[in-house]
Length: 136
Image (cartoon, rainbow, N blue to C red; front, side, top):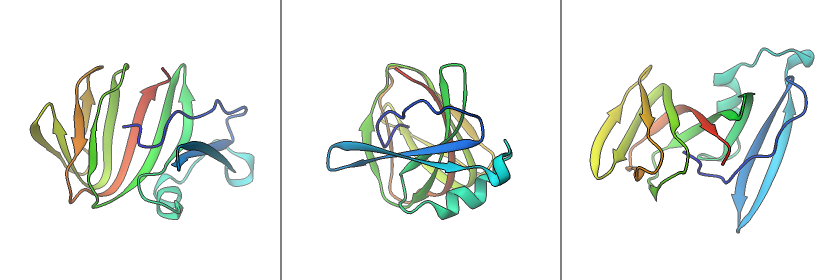
């Protein structure tokens, strides 16, 4: 889910970027991988995020961004996207609501949200979420 707006394209595979929406303006921060490598410690990166629901782009596959974010129990209102997105729960539990129906997703579980389908996050979602979504 794109909680934070669209991210800018990153040059070089050894960087990650984080985009968060602050009072209507997108802000992107980039962080180097360890010693310029392509290896990323996803749990450590998610734990270090300064704000829950603020995603960080880990890398790109074609036009798709692979993002990580930390869930903190707060709900996220209904949204829909022009592109399909993949939600993978690394740890914790995602209390997803898809087109009005509850779809709980536990650790290691994945849900593919089709393009245009309304979805939200109910209160109580906690843990680490990996998101794969194409740029619009």
